[in-house]
Length: 250
Picture 1 (cartoon, rainbow, N blue to C red):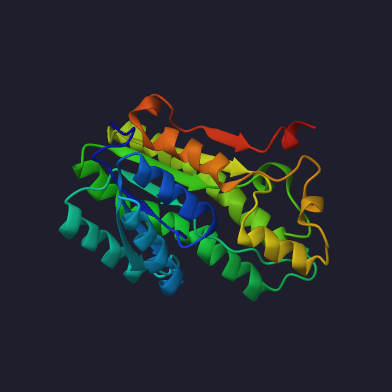
Picture 2: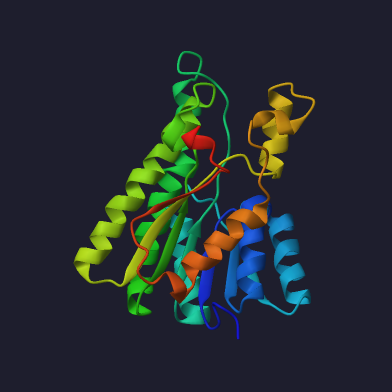
């Protein structure tokens, strides 16, 4: 018996990187996973790979910054599955630039995906999750929300918003009696395509140089997502979990 048997999970940014690892692990442990991403080809391929391995998965295209698309996605999940137990807000991008060179356009673009996208996901999933008897919202933040990275100024701001938003939503759900837990994850440098892109933009020959404590693997994050998605974490609510090999405490 899988740790999330019978649960329906919606994952954003699931075509690659952390999101795909989350989808793979949740499907392997019995969940029906709905993968979403703006990259249609890669998303369909990820869902097909899960089905080939014996899991239950579908893909739907989603731009997380588009409220209408969120409404349509949740309506589709309601129609197809009748419930939603797990929401993983993972979609993201990295825009480099310090506070003086970061343009307002770039700042807004970064926050539209990672801060507004998380807000819209939570806002439109709440009703269906409540009707389903509760569930777990897992918001992907970052060590950037703890440490602040000047060269990734807009990114740090967006991830800080996710961190605070998650706490506010956890309190809201608890006080409203929704039985919906909300937690945030704060990975350090994880070996994903986004890390490859960042290393390239910084002109680094070795992506390992991005972190003094080494790079984690997507599964290191996905295993924590699995715990938070499962009933094993039923009393874990409003917390933040660092997955960073002690980076933030050094």
